[in-house]
Amino acid sequence: MFGMLEYAFMRNAVYAGILGSIIFGIIGTYVVVKKIVFISGGVAHASFGGVGLSFYVGIPPLLGALLFAVTSAVGVGLLGSKKIQREDTAIGIIWALGMAIGAFFYHITPGYLTSPASFLFGNLLMIGTFDIYLLAGLA
Image (cartoon, rainbow, N blue to C red; front, side, top):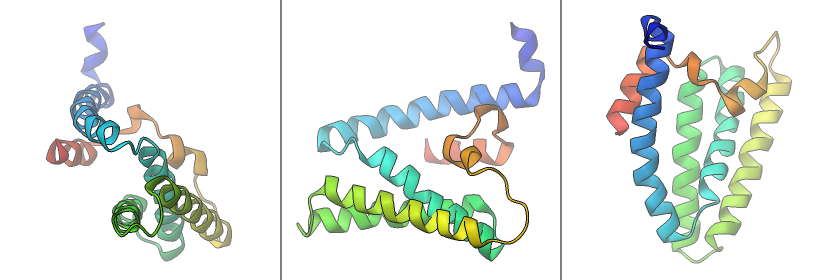
């Protein structure tokens, strides 16, 4: 079993799993207390808009996804705090808007692109060293 850890991609997957469990444990508690369980799906799917826009503009998809994720989380917070909409409604709006933007830009981008499912679902074994440092910074 420990022979698998000879490979860098397996070590990265283990590191990401450990760091992710720390991060998600902390964030999960906050999400449950605030009763905004829908936020994880909303922000994750809204960040797909950043992926589609990134492909269209030609910048790294992680950067676009990160910008869209932060913007959507701030947008949900602003809509919810100003009582413009209930937080669940705001999350649903941002979820649909982000997915629509991502699908639109993904469709109009010329050339061959990676499958959108790889960005929506991911693969823990494809985590790189930079991603580990990013997770460590968040933890």
